[in-house]
Amino acid sequence: MRQLIAGLALLTMVACGGGDDGADLPGLKAVKRAPVTGPGGCGVGDAYVVSEVAGVRLSRPSIMTMQTARALDRWVRSGAVPAIGRRGGGLVELTVAAHYACRTRNSRPGARLSEHAQGRAIDISSFVLASGERISVLRGWRGEDSRVLRRMHSAACGPFGTVLGPDADRHHQDHFHFDVADYRSGPYCR
Ligand SMILES: [Zn+2]
Image (cartoon, rainbow, N blue to C red; front, side, top):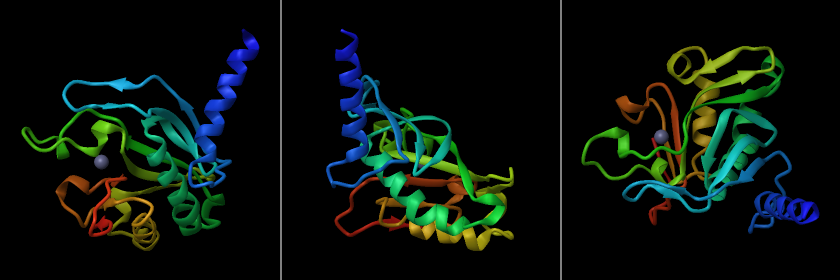
């Protein structure tokens, strides 16, 4: 029995890290969990609890689909880590402002369901460096960290289908919103 459980756990990790695009994602820590069932159209069938992407930890374990976890991993690896570079000893943590949440867009009554409601979105509010320094979207976007934050924002456009930051609207002054929505016209990034 114990061997069977170990075997199943291994399968889960392989299914997650390997990916159907063949990419090897050694820095991605994600554990498959039971599907999340929510009211209305809320819920996540392909649900994982993600604690680390591209070797960078998340401030809290976050529920999302594997497609979302892969997009986040790709962005951290190719966008966030290089943007920070060696400053403060490098990027060690993403502050997660929101992950799965059964709510409408911008939590407005009657609005369409948010991508968060299907585990297809994540909000990041700050970046913690090894030195303990924190780069925040709220303070940095129009401040001294403008360059590094804008570089990270634009690098997310592609890995994610929607990228929203402080220039998008008043709902995104203190975080980046990323989701894996697929638009025929290409990514929507503001
Ligand atoms: Zn969001």
